[in-house]
Length: 610
Ligand code: FEO
Ligand code: CA
Ligand code: CA
Ligand code: CA
Image (cartoon, rainbow, N blue to C red; front, side, top):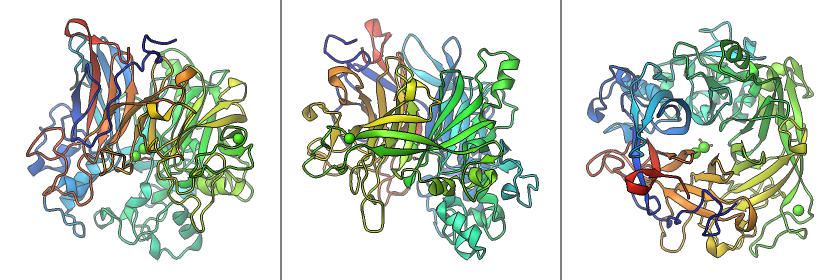
């Protein structure tokens, strides 16, 4: 299937040049509008955003900070319910005169309220293409202090009990929610990622077992970055050594039920969850693909025991509500098939012409049964990284989104970068992670055996080795490198209805190319996967200065992106903002959701990429 221009359907737009412009840039013939910004009212009665007079109470009713994942589900007519993760806060960009050593209690409590999740309704105008957030009874915020339920095989474990929650089943808050997924049964998933940064005094913990477990998860500091421990002792490990064990989970939210308590699913393991995406096995069971975003960490999957029940009946909803509590957790091992595995300065491929091989899914635990020597099932779920260490999983270059193509079933892994690969004391290159000091990341494609997402083995190959196409160590699936967009640090993945891959990036201007010596702004790229254009990357949109491009959603009618942390460049503060997006000159930058559409006949919206 192709267009007149020889490009796959859905990718026939004029490539956006790399740039460092403080704006949303889209192809000619496309338009954009801001759907919702940090501080916009979510709940009926919420005050309008007032940068100079913020309060925790107002923030808890407004759109949070640094929205990352964005998912949508259809409601009725032109209305959709949108779900956003508010990953973290950047206090120097949120508060004038912020003192990092001595935050005020009000600033801390605003920060807590600016974390978490938003559920809210958006409405698309079919005549103009614009999309706006609207107030609705479904709208709600979850923050760092909202109640969550722990469910699944580790719920109630002694490892999850605290003085405030001797049951080990009720947690206050969700933290550092990065990417996520939309399930076929109508819920949203959200990954708790770098939760380590909220916990203080790990360095003073004396119990060597507690200390070793904390260190494997990167909890190593005395004072935490945001000093929350000064106002809430559960963030002090000396007071509550188990509190960190209650973060690092996959969260599931039912958008249809504003009164339901959201859940943290222990069966999916605990690590720095980038996110979780669902694909159905041949027999209808739910398979969740997941990455642990840390240098040299792992790719996981979970397979439910029950099949997804179709339909929107009460019985189906109740059955599907436990799919992610009862199943098997696996970790991936990748085995290359070539002796020479490193991609080098001359860009030579292995003798068989590909970085490729086979892989297996190693069982970690199922229900109360552990498959890891020396660890109970509860320990496997709560300290999943150590379990994967024991079984010899493959250490990857920071696994971010892992997501199956709904058209082909092939699965893609964004490996964002790993500058430590091959350096002294660290693991060297292997065929699945072939670049030493991998500054720009790569993308791996795999096929489950028999095309079944529940399979125990797979075959894989590298699709992209990212960077400046002028750099010989880059690889674009063999496509003509003079015809591709430079790309670095792939983070989030999405697919359109035609089976094209879309990649959004998070680089902190890590890639300098001719014409943009300060480094290129992040963006969203359409990527061909089939035929003669396989491996072609074409930049579709770029985000403002200092922002990363998160939360891509690509449909035939609209594209959504989430410019996260605009203005976050070295030395930025409210006094020296390095972006004034989206409100313009004289304003402070605000993380937001952006809607992009194509102008069609007579001013009505056309179809994306055609
Ligand atoms: Fe929050 Fe892995 O990016
Ligand atoms: Ca090979
Ligand atoms: Ca991410
Ligand atoms: Ca990111």
